Length: 74
Image (cartoon, rainbow, N blue to C red; front, side, top):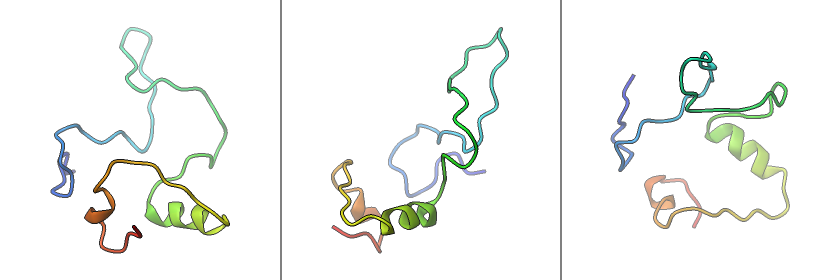
């Protein structure tokens, strides 16, 4: 697994797709609560499917991020 893909401008590692809770004697970097199955999705295809259902979408993020993806809409 490449912890620092070339398309990222940071050395911070990616958050895990799957969460495995820490034991009580260890710090839990990703605390959370059960929300049920299929509530959190991953990948651009899943995001595109959700956005395509909406009449209007406003995305907020860092400037220049869209330039990293050739099919992004400005």
